[in-house]
Each structure stands twice: as C-alpha cells, then as structure tokens.
Length: 116
Length: 112
Image (cartoon, rainbow over all chains, first blue to last red; front, side, top):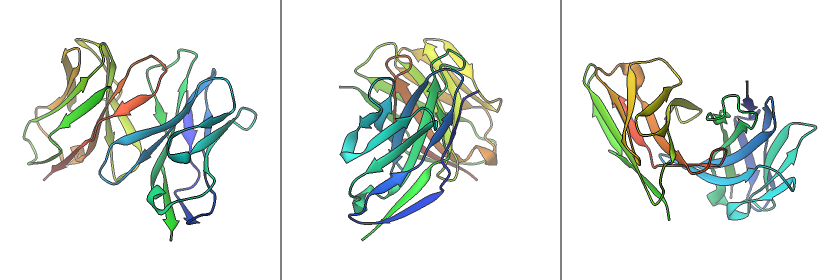
C-alpha cells in the first residue's frame, strides 16, 4: 500500500526567508510524486512532479522539490517566501508498480503562513 | 487548453434530499475522471474514479454514487443526503495514466 506523510500541520516563515514543507512517502515500486497548493475555497493547483530523472524538480511560482530515494522524501522548497505563498500544501504519491495505480494518495496537508 | 468545470459552486440541502453534482472537462478526450471529498479543509478522500464512459469504480462504500454518461462528463449523486455528506467536493481529470491530476474549482455542500 502507498502512503504519504506530511509531519507538520503548520509552517510559519518570515517573508523573504527560505521555506521548506516536508513530505515522506512509502510505495512498493517506484514513486510518482506531486505537490499541489490550495487557496481557501478553491480547488487544488498542480505545482510540480517527479517521475524520473533529475532529483531536483522545478515547478510553478518559483517552487522546487528534491527527491531523495534513500530518505523516501520529497520536500518542497522556495528560496524566498512571499506573503502570497500562504496556503495549504499537499504532497501526493502514486506507485508505478500497478498496485492501486489509479489512486493518487494525498498527505493531510501543511498550512503555510508567510509573515510580513 | 484544457479546462474543468464544476457546478454548482455552493449548495445547501436538507437531510434526506437528493443530490446531483456535475463535472465537465473541455479540451481533452478520454480522460480519467475522479471525485474527491475534502472535509474540514484538509485531507482528500477519493470517492470514485472512471476510466471511460459507463466505467465507475468506488473507493469508499457510502450513500453516494457516480455516473459517466459522456466522455467528459462525471456526475456525483445521492438519493438521500446525510449530515455527514457535508464537505467540499472536488472533481479532477488526468490525461495520461500516471500523470498529474487537474482539479476543478469544487462544490461546497452543506447538509442541514
């Protein structure tokens, strides 16, 4: 079975500082990994994904994530936080082995607050 | 470009009333379609997915049902709503198996 953990319910960071939102995963095969952002009363917006290749993935709005196979992690990062980055962030995983291949498993979400 | 629509945006229904939420996708063909429920602004629960017309798979047993009458149309229904059906319902489409999913704007359902 596949699973995702986002260990922090909330992350607070000062505007202009770097931010990290943590995600660890568990799958049987190779992981497909995704990050989404959700603003209040809106649908989820896709930020970036890792399927294969370079471990550092760059996405929308200046976000990037680093795939670490040995630590089974896929942390979301941004060098300089903006107040407008304040939102709910979801990590998601899919197993490429075919087990439950239609199901994208989401973490519980991390609320990011960027303080002016 | 592809777009996904959901309606209504908000809905307030009494307990025991029927439900019909609609999701349509434009600009793509034969997408995989998904219904999720999000409670209390947090985790997403997969309710149904469909890989083609008339093909529905249910992930969680409940009093909800789904149908896919057309390639790009996905409907979530209930014959009798429960208080516990309140939540934020999200539809999503996926163009390639294993690829990212794209979400609609959601429907906020309140059952009173």
